[in-house]
Image 1 (spheres, rainbow, N blue to C red):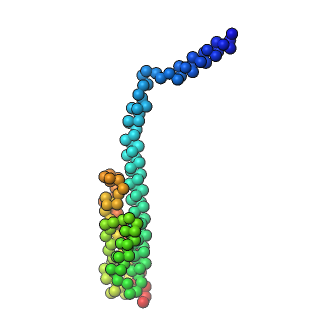
Image 2: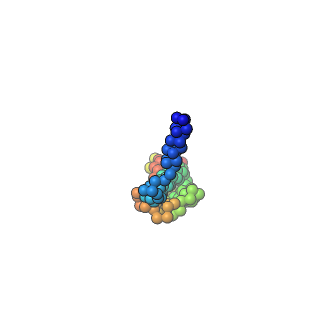
Image 3: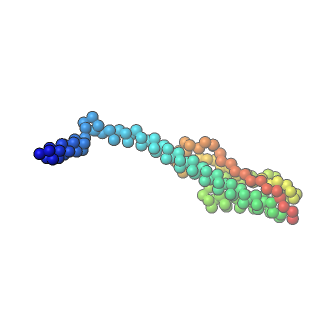
Length: 150
């Protein structure tokens, strides 16, 4: 007799646990409606920051390649700028500005520091439709190396 009443009690408790309480109806929908925009905002922010870090690294690599070319003798500024822009376009970065210091490499004697600077607007490289998370308006990368002897 004790076993059958225990079975009935367990059945009733299990049944009550599975029944939805009237004051909890729709709670999951409301919780989702509150949390979903926040999660979307955080996800877009992570995408934006990740893209900015990736573009900065690609720009550093391109400026380094440009500086390595610029320190060689008999290389012109136009060749350096073309090489850097080709590297950037190959990486999917368009609209970058490349500048060299000194601007004319033919007059630079051996040992002169040559700086290759690249800048691009953050809004032109963003994957997010309206970039809210770009902390800087412009991303800049530069590399300086000394000019070699001829």
